[in-house]
Image: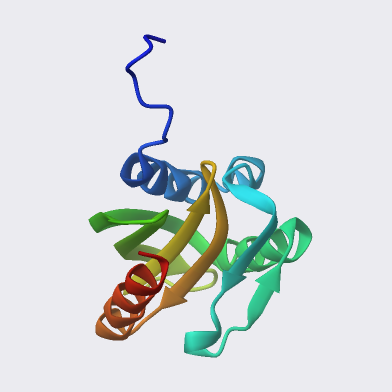
Length: 141
């Protein structure tokens, strides 16, 4: 690495890469993005707060295994400064036992530390998520 190159990870790219393993049910790779003390907070939508690798992994495994087909697409990803990202994600999937497909559009606000997720917050209400991200960015500014 050259002396003037940044060692700060590109959080937009990390955010994009963090969603890819779920499409292929690679939970080890999914968890590699989380700090050991990380938290996945799905409480804005009534799905609880999951702290630590074991709890986060269990949540993601349960979520992903509910679907036979599953893919995510990043509609929007932005770095808001101070280790904070905001992403709008589209999930297309076919639930186990169904012929129909579901499409869910949701947002994730992520706090990163040293290239690892320390807290991810999922929201079905995109504008609520955007407001929360802006508040957090201002607080962390």
